[in-house]
Amino acid sequence: MRKVIMLAALLAVGSFLVSPQLTGAGGGHAGHPLVIELDSQFIEKYANRATITSEFTITGISRDHPDPNDGEVHNGGWADEAGLPCVAEVMNVARAGKAARDDFHKALDGRKTVTVTGAWRIWGEHAGGGNQIQARGPKPSGTLPGAPSNPDHVFEIHPVTILKVGNVETDATPAIGDTPNFTPNDAHHAFVDLYETTPCKIVPSGDRIRIITRPVQLNFTEFLIRPEGLLTAMDDGGHSLICTVFDKDGELLVRNRRMVFVKGTSADEAVQDLRRGGVLRVVGFARIDLALVQWRVKHRDDTQDKNGHAFAAPPLEWGLPYEMIIVSAKPFAGTLED
Image 1 (tube, rainbow, N blue to C red):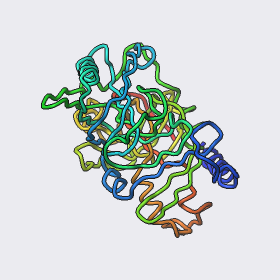
Image 2 (image 1 turned 60 degrees about the horizontal axis):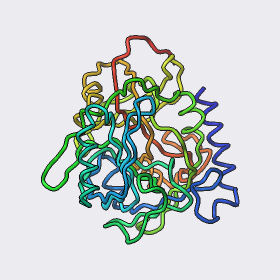
Image 3 (image 1 turned 180 degrees about the vertical axis):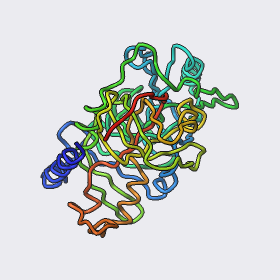
């Protein structure tokens, strides 16, 4: 299975890189490249962090999503720290997320800028038709492209953990977990059909790095993980873990993929309690792995791995570097075979 995935990914990268659309006008729509440009210092700061804290200007708030649709509320706006249009998403707004949801509405009604903490996510699902070029600092004047509650964006704070309005903080961390009556996406489709076959080209230029890829759909996905390394503390108190990924029926999908756990969540507690050889049933969604972006830039001229095996393509032209943010984790009693 792994050989099949890698072959498909390399073929996708090859066809992507020779496409004349690569250097065309801004993308983000299906069939057109998406350009994300980030500051190297931002990448350095957040490569080993699960979360971000940012001043946030609210431009609009969605209707509450019913539980079968994911149970979230989307707060559109601009994140100063990221310097990008952003959607801050609160989970389980009908229950533990209701207080944060209400405070977002009060802040919008009062035209107040808020401070939002939560898992940072860079992902091209709702990029719209233009390139996404980072400009850290306050929101530019004018209207952001796209709907007020869902501006064209690649940056999210998802899920929100803390909302601060003035001196009042609301903790949304207890809202992070399973949503009743919601069915996450199929893992085989997410990993095999999408994540592992999405092409990417990384272009360093001075203190900026461009990630040229394509929009990728899907949010929450359910799957099984088996650790392949040691649990590692992240700079903000969360944890990361390199894992092998299986679908919920035990079929091996992907090896050596980093999982990210946000401090204070039940998922983070579950992974810390996981015994050697244990397996977790998890729900999570993908984001671009900035640590992998860094590694590929550093090793851009390498032609082989540490064992002397030649790379099939230069590191800057490998598939999309991604990791998974885990929002729910529970022990799995079954056995898994490679």
